Length: 247
Image (tube, rainbow, N blue to C red):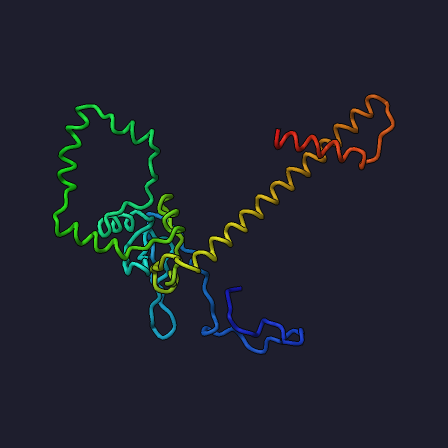
């Protein structure tokens, strides 16, 4: 049985089964999904399709072209580093770098003389002409950066959407999520994480509850004491659980 896109094997709207009155046709066939993976071993297959046309099935890809819409710039990448370099070159701002505390900044200033001498040539190379400095200053006047994107740059990963079809064209191209679209997905991910944490806490509580009840029953049995009902142990178990969680 292959993958078929026909309606012969499907039920009617009323729920009744159809009788297969003809065989399958080539033009109704379906193929396995690409399920493109991220890998250094790039693999793209050529597939001959109806009409002699060609599709390119990307099975494994290592990079993709991603666009930063608000900045009108596109780079071939697999992480945020190329965009970070471009931003530094274009605006003179190193985004994503964590700000040093006053103590760390003071410690960094106390360099040895050898380190200072070695840093001098590097500082000379980093010098920019007045023309370039004026250009960067003018660009910074209109510079705006979303707080969510700045947070992502510090981790080295950006949320992006793949807008191409890797199973059809063999490429994974897309754009960075920004604005309301980014906010929507960030909230969705946070809700998902919250639900997962809640489920984990429930399972821990249930396991602890069961274990505590078992221990109390065994203790009561050993002492040959009449067992109390389950409700009598609930306050004790809850207080014990709170002590374990919050000390």
